[in-house]
Image 1: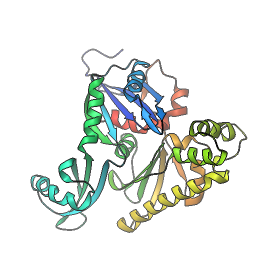
Image 2: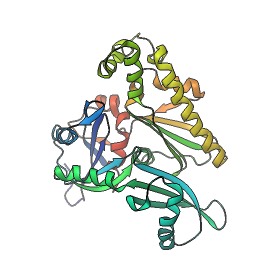
Image 3: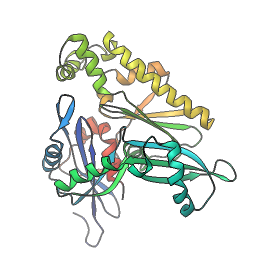
Length: 341
């Protein structure tokens, strides 16, 4: 029981992906953060497109008795653009006006059709400042708002997936600013790469390669459906003593391309910041596929470290530590969202 007089707040992070819906509920009081509930539910696919997403969201919440009046939501994909730019030093008010014109140089959308936000990151040289610019297409954001309105749920915060992952890690862990720290989130349709120095994001990239590409490669090679391929991967490689999934010849081209794109991302950061990438922390559902991480490690010549974004919370009595430890790495995005005020 919570002590009388303490301020108790529930915060819900909702990650609506293309493959699954994930939710995390955190209760915050003055002394601690309590993981009160979490859930993950697969989204049905028809002709390669997600269907009945509203129904899946409702079931995901109801199954673990989460009844939020509002949630923190994430966005990602081709409708979202993040850029790191350099601007002359100016006041925040003047910068807000200038960004309307500057944005046209950096985003591939009509500025009248996007919602923009920015954050000043610091000054690399006298008279200049680094600015993080984020833009999302208005119709995409509006579709997410309308989806939640139909469920009777408001939206408190909308964040970008990669920043939510970073927020989940930075909330409990120190980060060195002497080298770059990379966060790689292996998803179903894409892989997010974010590199920071200390708590300041310096580079972000969305790589359009994910678990679906592994399933598609196996499906084509074995002449089966993508759904069958998803099950077959774990039948062939997921059991103890099974083969490494990426030793299967049809899949190596996918993993080679993914590894190359991660390496290019690191190289860009290192050239721009004149600092090497030190630690790499990985998360996401694709990382659970046997051999994916070890293959990237071998190709990149680095060690990638798994982390559980749920381990720093006090667990509600209804939750199992063993279950949380087993799947926690998949929940970096909703945890980071739930930690937002």
